[in-house]
Structures are given as C-alpha cells and as structure tokens.
Image (cartoon, rainbow, N blue to C red; front, side, top):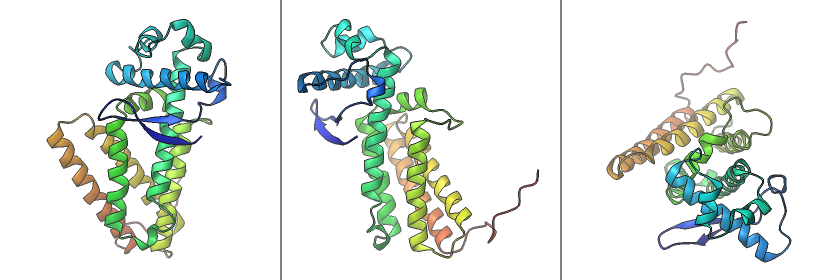
Length: 238
C-alpha cells in the first residue's frame, strides 16, 4: 500500500492510501469516485475516533462526518470494526514509510544524535497530525503478537531496521544484544510519544527532548561497549 500526504483542513495533514486491504471491504471500489468515497469515510472515521475514541464512535456518526448516508458506508464496509482495521492499516503503512525513510541505507554516515532527532521528530509529527492513531492502536493491538497482528509485524520490521543500524555501527555486538537494544529503543519511543500526546504542550516538549537524549545515550552506550549485558546470551533456566 502506498501513501502520500494530503492537505485536508487548514493546519492538518491527513493520509491518502491507495486502497484499504480488500479483505476489509464489503465491496472493492473499481472507479475513482468509489475510491474517493472510501477515503472520505476513513478520514471521517479518524475525525470521529480522535474526538470520542473507538468504543464510542458509531457508523452513524462516521457517515454524518463524511457527509454520506449510512447505507453508502455499508456498501463498502461491513461494520465499524472493518473501518477501524482499515485505519490501522493506513497508519501502519505510513509509520513504516516514516521509519524506512528516516533510517535509510545512508544512515550509518549520519551521527546518532541527528538520526534519533530525525526519527523522533517525524514520529512526533505523525502523532500530532493523526490524533486517532493512539485510539486505533489500543483497539487493534494484541499484546500476544498473534499471527496476523499488523502492529506486531510493524514492530518487528522497525526493530529489525534498528538492528541493522546497530550492526553498521557496532559489528562486534552480539546478535542477541542488538535485538534487545533495538527492541527497548523502539518500545521506549512508541510508549513515550504516545504518553506525550496526552500531556500539556510544555510537558510534551520536555518529554520529547528527554526521550531523544535518553535514546541517544542508551544506544551510544550500547555501540561503545558500555552496556551491562554479558558478551553472550545468558542461559535461561527452565
């Protein structure tokens, strides 16, 4: 799925997906007019969910926000859950694009501080421009990482990208250590940015600045051999 940024209302940037996963649609639009209507429904759903959360959002409210009938909505989506899953797919595709772009193959030549600032700043902008994301994430994320969990798949992809960056900067680092450090960094950024979105503007700025400093220090220590981890993976007793 390819996405591009599109201007919606002044001061807000939304996401335009080529199309939601066909499995989530009752009817896949064949013409541009139908595809535009589907995107309009998803844009409206994001607005409603940002204001009310997923549980309180209704298809009636989404249809009203999209300035269409509920019947038209149901032509494309079988239920609210499919709309939420389609939004999750849209958000995940954009997050994957952001991470791939920020952590490009040229990244080893970029200072760690510049790289972290670039990644966190891009992700912060995504959170700010998509206030529905945290609600959708909470509604669709399965902590057990069950097969088919797109959030878990995205986490694995981003973690792998960070592992590659660690490999380029510290090839001597054991594989288990690269995976552990990458996992902690990815989860820390996701959790603290999510929390920052619920804080006051002043608190949000402080959280983001401290997050950047924390990740730079943590990864720098790992790269320069100042980690407390043993040189080999510790044995796990049964």
